[in-house]
Image (cartoon, rainbow, N blue to C red; front, side):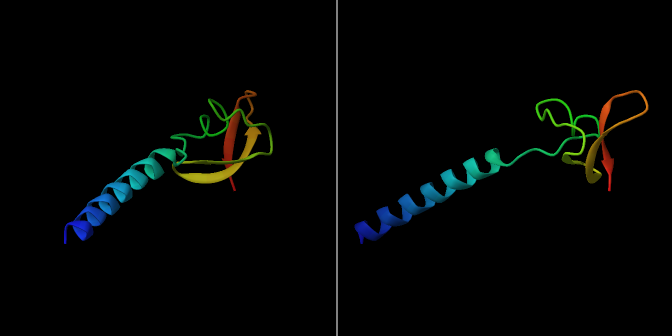
Length: 71
């Protein structure tokens, strides 16, 4: 009986550990169109991008700022 209980505890701890690291490893979606192509991404013109409201491609706007333009 004790063997089954320890296996159950081990499985529960392992599952919690895996779920915690899976959530932290998920990539974050940018909050806005500028951050989707800049910041830590370092994307260039034509690169696929996504932000909270949409997905698109990185393009320069009229001011020369690289932004994510929705498809």
